[in-house]
Amino acid sequence: MDLTRFGAIGRGVLVGLIAGVVVSVFRFCIEYGLKLVQWVYGQILVTPWLVLPWIVVSVVVAVILGLMVKHEPDIKGSGIPQVEGQLAGELDYAWWPVLWRKFVGGILGIGSGLFLGREGPSIQLGATIGQGVAEKLHRKGADRRSLIAGGAAAGLSAAFNAPIASTLFIVEEVYHNFSPIIWTTALASAIASNFISLNFFGLVPVLHIPYGQTLPLSQYGNLIGLGVFLGVFGYLYQNVTLTMPSWYAKLRLPSWLDGLIPFLLVIPIGLLWPQLLGGGNAVILNIAAHTPVLTALIGIFVLRFVFSTISYGSGLPGGIFLPILSLGAILGGIYAETMVALGWMPQHFVTNFIIFAMAGYFAGIGKAPFTAILLITEMVGTLHHLMPLAVVSMTAYLVVDLLGGAPIYEALLEKLTQPKLPEHSGIQDRLEFPIFEGSVLEGHQVRDFKWPQESLLIAIRRGERQVIPHGDTLMRAGDTLIVLTDRSNRAWVHHAIDHLTAVNT
Image 1 (cartoon, rainbow, N blue to C red):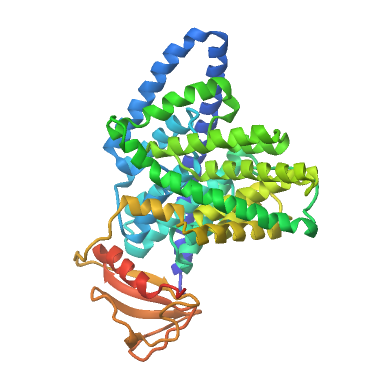
Image 2: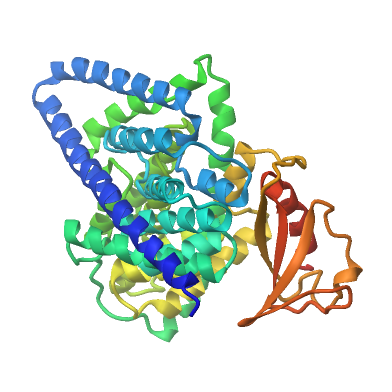
């Protein structure tokens, strides 16, 4: 009896339970921290002189966060690029210093009302827990990576209460490979983590949005229009987010003090519009329940677009996952209200388009349409939107692709790392590379290609069986190449073989 998968699932459940507790406490602290901050702004409006000590507190918190980032740069930003780099072998770090600093830093930064999301940090928290469990269980190589991936899925699952979408996000966007050992471990971790989170926060979906009726086929033309609209603004968001660090570099502040900018700018926002503070969960629910007029929606979008990129560009611990969804919801409201004003859509479908736009905007920016569709389905709590979600997501995805946009997390990872040159540690590791339809390798024999000298093709997984390859073995779409290489050489070999498995365009 082969107990390999059983053991992987058991370890995944262990990681998921621990990650579920940690991330649920993290989420709880952020939610109540944001409520405290909004209460403080209410007191300042009553007693204006309190703004002076609040400015001092904000500066102190910004400096503390800056020092934490300076001592541990791997806690910067959402953490998803760092996890993706770990799984690809392009970077690594000690798990405990990142875990506690990301936990504390995320609560201080996101809970202070900055336009940052908890989901990216939750993914990194879960991944570091998986890394820690792997270390305690003396797991190396593929087993270690499966626990890191499982922890990442558990972190997102606890943050969003969406275990299926969380698993898919890890294999589609972070790991880029539907390896059986990865997805089974990730799914087990996500389910266990979701169970813990539901005990903390209840069974109501995170973005439970009531709507009037299912969208009729006569409105599907507007879905294409919405997808194009979201794709254009998604491409804009990608470019602004990726260039924001270079704009911060022009300031005369040391980079670790960049957080002072958003911490000071958020004060007038908190005094004028405290309901807009935070990652955007409440913003989405409020807009869906009582959609503002078109001019107000445009103003909210401009404010959240600008300040979310400023917040993230500072390098503070916090993500863009939920801010992207909130911007998508606002854009959906803008598009729908415009169509209503033109007489091309009934008013009662506005809420539907707010829901569809969240998926479309994330699908375009993250280049992960499957995750976007399932995520919004799980978060909203209904299957009735699957077809419209798919149409909008695919349209937005294609528009961003035609404009030349890259997956946002992959692009952020490229800014963190440089491809490594071959090294030798003497410890072997395995890599898996799927062959897709249209790949350069499809329909060719193994001997037709020059494989990296630092690697050895040891097997080809074809369905449920493995083929031992030789020179005249024909490679097919759907195969998975299993490559052996030196552990310290994984990133270099990964880059080299990625060029071989590229899809012809």
